[in-house]
Image 1 (spheres, one colour):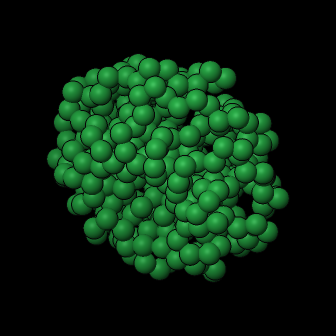
Image 2 (spheres, one colour; image 1 turned 90 degrees about the vertical axis):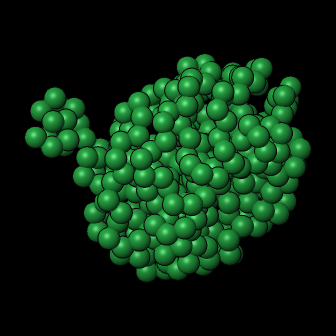
Length: 341
């Protein structure tokens, strides 16, 4: 009996959706059917209107009906309707992000779409309803430099931006607009913030960053802000942290980084546990992005060198890497996202 049949016999649903990879080199976005226990299906046809430059990040709307791609060339963000394939690209926002779309994220309600970008104001947020609304006013206190990653809290009440330059992370209350920036954490990330991630219960906020320990995690309380930074893991990620993600149950935290083994995963319970053993087949080069499937059964890593994306079964440790897709992403996999369950 195969993995899929065993899961079905146990009465547990299997994730069957899609995995999107934002990458360098045209077509800049590649999307594949993906089924837990089986792996990649044949790549979907490219959108009729491609993103205009290297893809940096990708996100699905919470209902899975839309797919957003952040990219390096104007208009810096492209959004497509999605239904078992690309639909038409939505019209660009009337006020574009001011620079390269480094990170994109839909709010948990799907009512807003945030873009972290190069060039001031470094963060742009738009109402979203099957198309862009008028850009919200900028926050009164801007992030200090280029926005490299953005994440909403699970409640949608807070919006975090990881950025270049001190203090490397900024978090704002959100209610159809920016509130006053929260105070900085007492212990800052030690270098350029690359990516933020809230835990599924909203009680913790992780930031991947350049210098050791390469990831910093803080207790988080909406309305109050940062608590005292958790102790660093006993075995820190081996290089610059580019991506970080919690598993859907909050029991694991994974960091994509630029030095072998390129991916590090830890048990998480209000602090780091002992690092899990590396996968038997490592990603082939610098890890740039990481995400878990909605059921937590699989973990995807985007990275620089061909094959550009690897997916592993996950169950308190790495399983054997799934076979590579038959049509690979054309360039460095800088963003990865599973569609909602």
